[in-house]
Length: 384
Image (tube, rainbow, N blue to C red; front, side, top):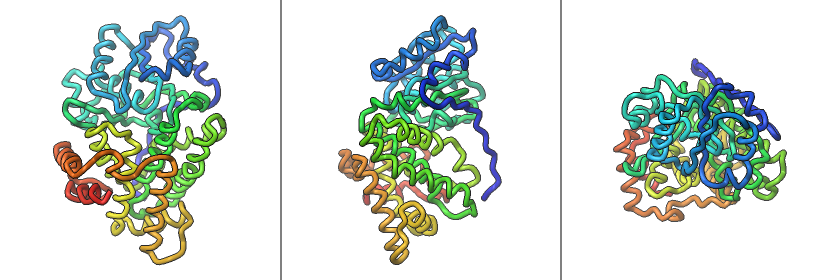
């Protein structure tokens, strides 16, 4: 295991009814901008709980943040922050709302062109407004990390950024608010953290048995809980464990001190930028093909993954790797997630566009070794 620093200042308030504790987490003199997505936060009563918890406070609301949050929409919120002298942000939603809130927090304190935050991957961020989150859709772990991804439709770009200034001050995780989520979002909320774990695990051995074992446990838990969450939408224990697993999948701990990949994510981002496919579904398309394509450099960890996650121990090395990749694809399909590019109307011209976008956005040396080029991405996509 390599030398590493691990820092995560986010306070987690987990369990039934925790939204009622919101008032104690925000400075009493704060002027709060509440950010949310579509109408679901209102329909499910989560916004009502927030308003009740913060009764008597100065609250301003900003809705309409999209899935795959848009740069232009976030800039409108930045303007509102300045106009209303906002001092604290509160994200009420899933990863998209929280990602947008991180960008708004950073852009509100940045004097230059806000697009710089994304093109620099966050390196220009030196300050940000404080913010908290009320999580309604477990998937991305944005509630306990400092990264975000923003889509610029005009530029055809979906870019990530991160900054130590963009950790949430706190996050409220009440599993009961997930009971009304549609099956599509629950399936996405299983697939997304599964691939988060894979990106930090399926690389090469570095003598990190704690990180490997933790990652394998998270993946086995998602494999077990995913179908159960779809079958029993109001089982508190299932939803609670799924919510916590998704948070742990990308709060920095399992990736501390180990090599990381993230090529499936970077390629997947360009599929979303092309046609707005759900982020998790792009990962389910790219990952199995990438695993097969990179079976040489990832061979040792693929065999470990086969044995310790899927209990595949018989056959030749190649047979076990084939079986593990097939099991991964089958897992996504059983969640109701299609795993082929043609399921999302991406043809040869679409692949050309994706490869060109990777080049345009500097994604030319992906993977744990930095050796996955746009030409390699083309081969992976064509096989998908």
